[in-house]
Length: 121
Image 1 (tube, rainbow, N blue to C red):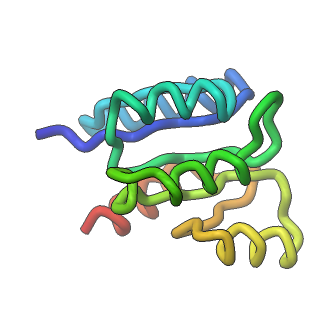
Image 2 (cartoon, rainbow, N blue to C red; image 1 turned 180 degrees about the vertical axis):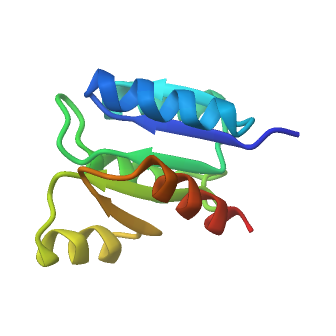
């Protein structure tokens, strides 16, 4: 069975880069451009990992993380924030809210894949 990853980001280049990289790693990839799209996908699909931007239109990453943490069936879903918010206080807030990892932009695709694989082991 393929691992499933949901990429939630409003930046098309980031989405395309991550989608390509994870498909090459034999992941089933789902894409949302903001938190409201992510919620719709999460009602249908149970990904093992969600890669989540924080600053997005409509529903931001913090609200989306809260939704994931409060939704039955998603309690084992791992969440990695990938954000341009790179202050220590931003990272601490993300982790305190329940994110499993926090990666700052710009990022290395290799690092993201490594972090995801580490969470899945």
